[in-house]
Length: 198
Length: 198
Image (tube, rainbow over all chains, first blue to last red; front, top):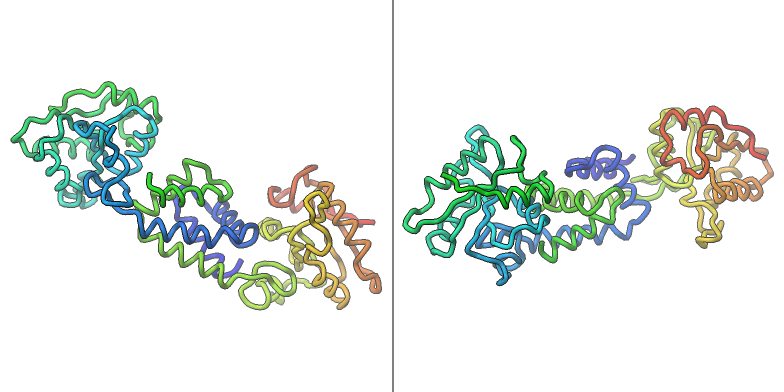
């Protein structure tokens, strides 16, 4: 179409789930059919980029110091579910099968991709364990080699002064798959069937 | 998640083809996985909103005075394909079965939706017909009541001083459907089988 249109389409096409046709359709929608929506979308994007940050406690998305889950006093903060990414947390929340707190690592150990312990959100997790407030740590990491390695690292390197029960979600997660793509029923059964990780 | 995140998701969900899950996935992508893409997307949106406008001649998207098709000297400007919307033009271009010029009405007559002749891009079409440069006008409008009414209006109200051949695409377009959703082969057969509109 025009250079600026093509550039916008290129940027839209990089978003997950959008291809050539769907990005073209959205660009036409924003420039021709409903041009009033474009500035509102820009404002929403800038507002989100400016105000959304990481929760100081668990690493989830937050707008203040703490995220909505950490700030919610009805959640059981003694049970902490460790996940790789925020979308994993969203998937578990959607299954409505967990009323504890979370800790988002923002990754998993992967030497082949150059991801080591220093790249993960581990210092905050160590501080939470040391504070003694955690009775159980549920490892909801991927059922693959990197997930296994990360579980192993966590049990070996968390402060051992105070005994913490460490479990790992088990049944239901297909081999090689991540938490993000599991359906709610599978996630619920995986949470229910967690077993002690040794 | 957070108020700004939810607001961004609401705006994304209004875009064509995006639902609750896909808009959530894109928002997480832009805020967590690839935050560097967000400012680039905002720039592309603003740049497109600022520089993309209507072609003074045909009503297509343009960045200068005229669109790429009107400025292309290899296109046959004596054959003009009249379409309702820019996406219709894009669909016909994609079928690579037309080498003439276009005229975008930006709508069709629809009394029930309050769209009259003054709401369509008709003045520029009248000027093109009056200039005598058009030998054939191909009406590529929807195969529905409003499309039929618009075709009728065009043949009745275009200046009759110079005889212009008016045709309408016919075979292949399913009843009740618009140009936008037809596939390339259907559009090619529809263009090939155009008949004189009386």
